[in-house]
Length: 378
Ligand code: GLA
Image (cartoon, rainbow, N blue to C red; front, top):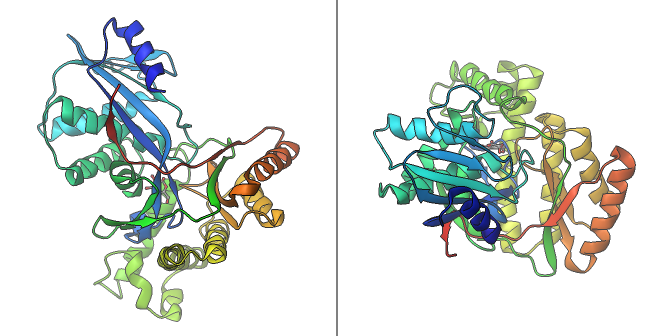
């Protein structure tokens, strides 16, 4: 991938880049839709990444290697879809008083877009980290992460901070146990001897801006407002753990109650997952994945037929120890825990079953867990 972007850059820019950055996508083992509720989550950075090549120039221009088109920051009409994330970062940083020299930038990579693997956050985080170095801002990583979250929210998604914290800080073979109430994280080894994490992308594309994602995050804010009328000290839905179920029930309607109980149960699953991984309890890890999926499907209602099909396949296969949908939902990918010696059989079986049911093949690949955003030698 590095060689590919290097070659394309040279042809397009007529010179070599002075720096290349890589920003990984992420999987999430458990803890979905908990980040904007100040709960827990457990994501990890994956090998599939967005790459950025940059050289100084007389005018700033950003080019997409994959789309073959480019965007000038002054351009206000015909802004390509992909450019909103670059625009978001530049506008946010400018607003905060930062500036940068002119540059030519090309980006592209092997991270599928809209697959629930956080391609948009990879763009935002990679770009902001690269601009930081190029412009000698020296903003500490924690602050840069907060800027990345704000810049992405400015593009229209009322999202949390899980993806950006993970992409900025990822560590090889580890997940990040993130406590979203204070943005802190610690590393949890996630390698289970004899098993691999497998990602299966349904090919059902979502853009979080267009999906019901924002509706869920707005619903959570509205539930919190209701509960605060009786419990003014509450800061988030994750704080409702100690409140009796009957009290919550009396303050919410059935849908709101389902959303809230999902969030509380999912936080608990993250804690249990950390323990299960620590103690190498493979069966428990698998069951937690399946329980998480049921919660997302039935209570939080962010799944879809294709995601449910892949998870049902994992249950019926008798091979995978568990699986669940990942990310915002309404499409995108699933994660499966599969014994290494049955990986190929499982992949083929799943691809065939999916093809027979939906008439197209899912993209399936094992997840290599890697470091977060970094400058690459070339
Ligand atoms: C998307 C958002 C994240 C998070 C997940 C759901 O990936 O970007 O902040 O809310 O959905 O867990």
